[in-house]
Every structure is written in structure tokens, then in C-alpha cells.
Image (tube, rainbow, N blue to C red):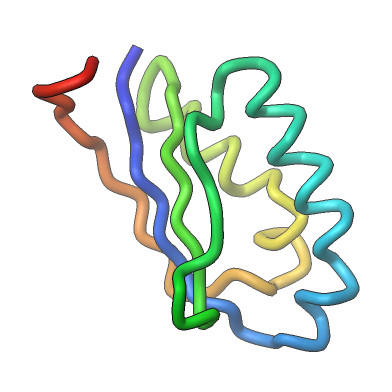
Length: 89
């Protein structure tokens, strides 16, 4: 298992409000499965960050692409990076 950090901005705040319930259902399901470790919006409200646990980058990208925010174009400028955890792993 590897850790991946996803960071993105919100492209359309009105659409975000519409899609948010489906996004939260998706994220909560992944959290219950142990895939999403931590997730939430940035303090400035312009985007969010998610810490994922996945077998490889392909799996992590697939999870990101299935998020209703990605499907509906709410998340933009998404950056997914593998994270080498040293402390707390």
C-alpha cells in the first residue's frame, strides 16, 4: 500500500453545492473502506486535500476520477502525488 495526496481547486461553487451530497457519500464510503485517510476543504474555501491509501498510482487515479466532483467538473487543477510517509506510518 502507498499513500497519495490529492489537492484540487473548486471550479464552480454553485455546481459544488449541487454535487456535494454525492461527493460526501463517495468520500465517506471510501473512508469506511480505509481508502480515504483524511479529507476536507482548505481553510480559504478555494479547494480541498485528500489523503488516499491505494495499491498504486493507477488505482489512486481511478478513485479520483470516479469522485462525483471530478465527474461533474467541480474539481479543477487536480494534483495527485505519491507521498513517502516517514513518521506515523
